[in-house]
Image 1 (tube, helix red, strand yellow):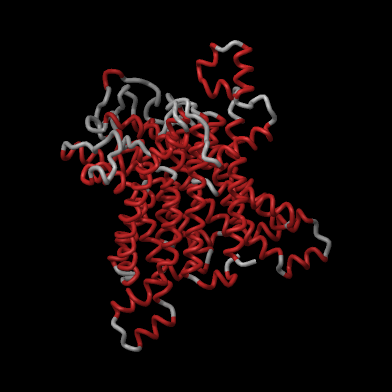
Image 2 (cartoon, rainbow over the protein chains, first blue to last red):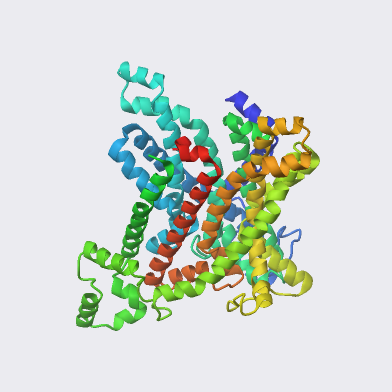
Length: 280
Length: 320
């Protein structure tokens, strides 16, 4: 583990990606426990639309709320949605992919055709359809994004699981009387850690992107709560007068996604030898 | 079974699955369909009127019968009536589709014209400063959401040059080519820039793979000029993954780039779907989602066909 971390930090993309992700995680944690420069909902009416200053490093919005505090809460909110949705998608997708590969036949056919149907929709449209049924909100965003990305995890797991299942050591484990759950968790899962780690990291980037997009459209996090997409949507009519309302949330979204993308690329380089040559 | 044949056989089955999912999803929306159809006006109905309407629309029958009737309507092009527009759903969709189609096409042209040369340029200068520059550009481009790029473009134009993008009704190209392009160029550039980053990355990576192949080395050792080796020998093979990526992306864009259409106030398919969701026009949501999914699947099938044509190993069963 320690040598892997050393290799990851020795990779230029991995180093930068890990730094950004750790920084964002620290900000998200601080926001979750309530450590922000100001109360993100408190309105300083006299200071409305003030530019960046010593008192408000990233300025204030149209209600006089501190942009930096709201941005920190927004990062926390986006991370909450991203980690929860990817966690659910990875868990459900892995379970479906593993069982489809292991049991095969009818179950495999049913699961994979269902995944084909879900993959027949563009991701954002499937999320919109889900929100139509359940209604907008943070919890819905989590479920919608998880729903959209589950088929990807199912496919990522099923392919390698099928080939591992046919390997000699799995036959040997069966012959020695190992239970199905033991073989699935110890033999198949352990061999799937590498592709899953890469997929989870990249999915976190997509999830951040989708969450900010849904909130931007007014279908994700609802006001007065803060989210990066919502802050960008609020900036549309004020961007000429108060460009900091656009610049800071825009850069924050971009940097967060960049962090996960860089980390995902580095993990792929380190864990998937086929990709090393292309990325060299 | 042959890959191509299997793809063709599963296509109608997946389409049937899509139709079931869309049908069931809309019926899972809280509240009954009459309320969904009439909105607040449904509150004015008497129980008898409500029952008569349910019988008229066949809503008093089982889901299976309803699905059968709906599906036969869909097959004959009847997707129902949009409550918001008071017009058949298919008419509303077909009215919005040309803009979305043109936007998708323009974005793809921009992305391919910029992304492929950039990818080839970076691959041929692997490890040098210019390669690093292209890789950084591509990584940042891929990490920037299209709506952030769009807002950035609008800000630069309005704050720096005092101009605002042309919004409002769609101007068809045949009617006013200049007006059409002035309306679509910025949204196309917004989508194209995001897409350029992906095309650049995949072109570079595919080109690096191909450049280290034996046949390229053989051509170089036989004295074929470097430029000819890159553009004539290596590039056609490196384009195979680019074709796949472009096809999938084009399919996504045909679904309406909802965020970009929203920012630039373009009356496209994506914005229409969003408005239908917000106004609870379920017939329109149902029709639009089905239409987009069908487009997406057709484009993906065409991509697979192109892929099979370009790479004969797949036709021979190399891909499962």
